[in-house]
Length: 287
Image (tube, rainbow, N blue to C red; front, side, top):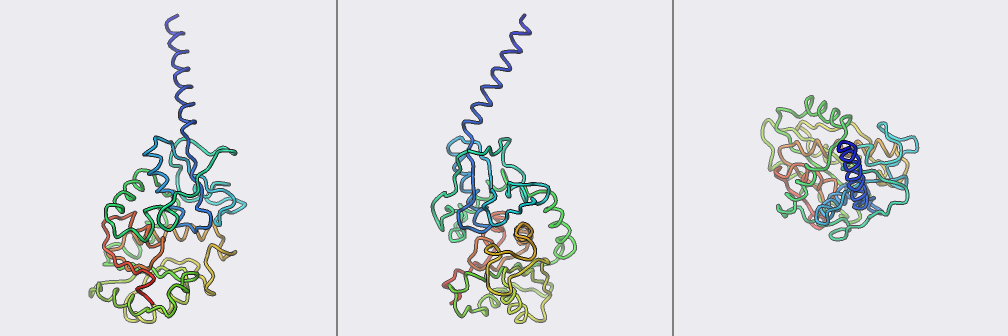
């Protein structure tokens, strides 16, 4: 009799626990008009909110997101977050769940945006949330490790991120020489450059100015007409383009020094590795 009573009591307590957990579910969507990196930073800001309010986070990036693929990607059908990352909790999105897309603050994605990461305290806070919640899928980590071991490990590497396409009107007449000079200031005899960019023309321009230095880059698609990767159908698919950006950000976080243009793609590596030294150019510094 006692065994039966204890069994039903355990079931009741478990049910109540699950009800409480579900009631505390907080679904994090995509920033309404943002690319991949700003949405990752928005997730981090929402995760801070969940911790402060004792909510259980769920990240759901649905079919309306730029990087969605109707056939799915990396074994996942509908949740774009899980194309690239493991779930952040044991709960899952259920159709009809309310969803938070805007967390306010700098650049619309919260205080962890690119404009604030000279603040080491904020960078450390974002890093802690990344370490606690964000787990890239093994298929991405395998690609990162393979490229790193073949091209970066054991070599003094300066990572350079050149943000082009739709931000170029903010830096009309972009002074590439300032980026070159900041890179040269960190170069040693044994240095190499890991160069990332969404813009093929900027990439080629920088590489031509750095002739004589070893340049490595992750083989992925770059826009050759100034249009952002996430605004139109691209080669490869949107979903693949998203994976490539994440792989590049993870690789940048493993560099010895970073030279960066204002962009949330530049900001994410500074969060993943909150100790890497860097030079970050705001738009107005490159006009």
